[in-house]
Image (cartoon, rainbow, N blue to C red; front, side, top):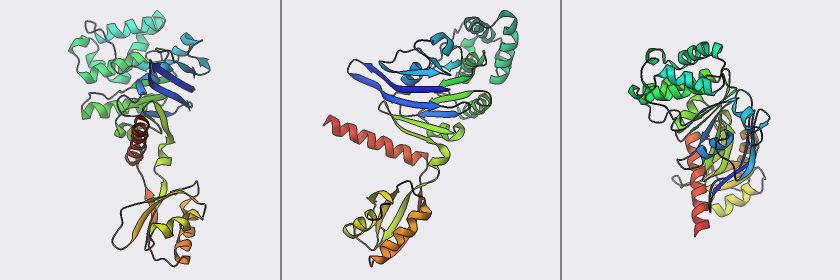
Length: 317
């Protein structure tokens, strides 16, 4: 449905997006996660045809966003981060104007407006000036214009930005409803938003795509925690010799034992744990603890963004 290949965007010497590639299938709900300034909005602008990439390509349902922009954009409903609205218009007037811009036939507009207003809960505000609306209702108005033409793809940039907790809950419900009939990409710097509504997460850090994973995969164990009497000079060769782990990280020692985190090398815990236990005992060391380490999205995000920052500092030095 959506394909990005080596997307890059530079502003002079500054690279805002650096060689980003991914695919999004039909019906997925994908969260584009990253700190403010990570490059999320720039990626969305390139996907929707509002910004030319310096290099790379993007396609929407087979239409190249550069060469077949109008066909691609006809399939997209887009909510920019700061949705441009006309404050002097009423909600209905603005949506009618948006429907005309989107090419919705005159005879089909009333039903399209009714459906969008109902979906976004704007019924009681439909005849009020946009200038009088709260931030939450303005966001809903922006979403309503995005879904007027019943798009196959809905792209939402920071859809809960500035909303209060009740409005955030309402927006989450709306996003899940949209996902019943469309592919949804939403960008955010708030991890709770991704956990609440997304099936898959793309993490962007300093313009690079550093993680592409399903949420259920992140919930699984990715490391083993080992506590043993053995010091690093004995444990590390023993574990490395198994060929079953990617790395051995030393952790803060616990009591009389030495603690380690073992990165799994694509093997299941049920394969690695017994082999590690045998290696430790065969080496004459005491085994105090050995268990899977569950890492949530917060832990993964903190780890990969801190690694990216460290690499950047080393490069700049």
